[in-house]
Amino acid sequence: MKSTINFILFLGALTVVSCKKENTFNDYKFSEKGSVITCNNQNTALINEALFSFEADIAVFYAQNGQENVPNAYGQFLRAASINRIKYEDIVSPHTVKVFEALKHVNDLWDANNPDSHLNYKGDLLECISSNLKDKKLKTTYDALVATNSMKPELFGTPLARNYRAAASDKNLAAYIALDLYYAKLFGIDLSNVKEKTVVEQKVDFNKRPTK
Image 1 (cartoon, rainbow, N blue to C red):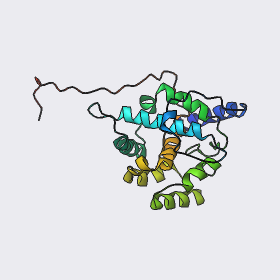
Image 2 (image 1 turned 60 degrees about the horizontal axis):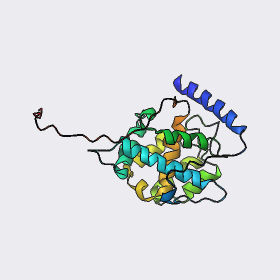
Image 3 (image 1 turned 60 degrees about the vertical axis):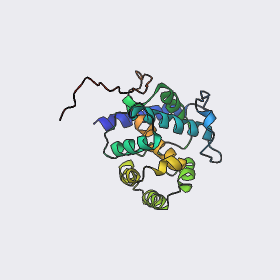
Image 4 (image 1 turned 135 degrees about the horizontal axis):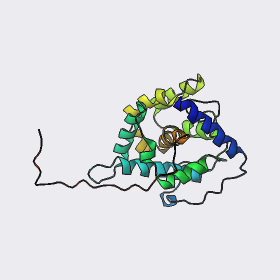
């Protein structure tokens, strides 16, 4: 029932978005990181911003001992995503909410007939991203799932979780993860009360005895 309600909300959002003529997003927080995703005739500036905002979110949320580590954050995020155990409202930042609202305006990115993800795997942007995947095995799996109309985040999430370190060096793979396992999941989630997150450094209490 919940997924059905979320999908209805998604359709409503998509209808509103279709009335918009252009994306006017200009709050680029990570522009200094450069452009790691390049696709012709696509708003790659926004896609790059979406990727880096996602990485910042998971790095903060999965920080250990006050230290952010993006590769390790990918590992924890993907393991949790593969078994649908992520509370996205606990991870997402206010900036990511702004980016998500802008992503709704990207032509050919979303598919109203795809209840499993809402992402348009056969759109120009996803085809560009998938064609540049570096890991041959992951690319073969991805292409086969899309070609047979069997692509689902849960199916591709399992091999991703086993190869999570590839996302740190392959930003096209990272972009897919951000779009399908993060932003596509935000439809139907109440993001009105999202607050800024900070890394909390765990201090050692030397007066506390360790428990067995």
